[in-house]
Amino acid sequence: MTPKTTSKTNKTPIPGVSLAYNLTARGAKRSRVKFNIELQTKLRRVKGLHEARKVHQETIEAEYKREMKSLLNCMQENNLKQIDLVGSKFYVLKKERAAWPYSDELEDRIQDIDADKKKEQRKGVAINEPTEYTSVGTH
Image 1 (cartoon, rainbow, N blue to C red):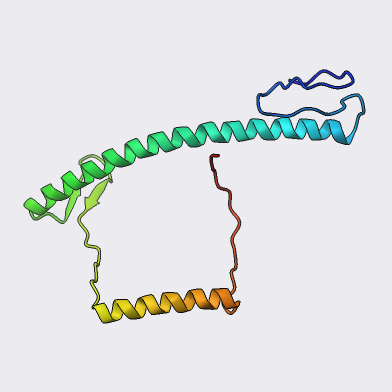
Image 2: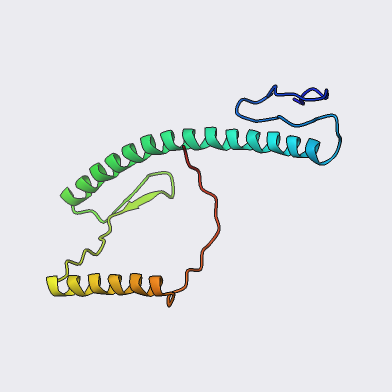
């Protein structure tokens, strides 16, 4: 979809895209409009996919956790360490995750260390080395 090539247009082929450019002059302005339209199209597609992924992910994750908890209860009741799915290579293992409760004195020292880390960040002793990535947000 390309806008009309008359003197000026405010008609937007895509809602939310401003095309108030003088379109009679060929060159940079015209390519900027095309780039803006393509960029907005890609953003709409990513937004739609992000929203669909979020809905499905939440639904699947809730059901997955519920079934895994039920399976863990069965494994604990029957003293099983592993369950194999017949006819496939799929299996579920019962594992333990370490959970270390620390003494109050050590927890206080950990909080002091965290505070010292923040001081070094403010003073510039610790240096931030950021990694670039893309993220999706809503306004």
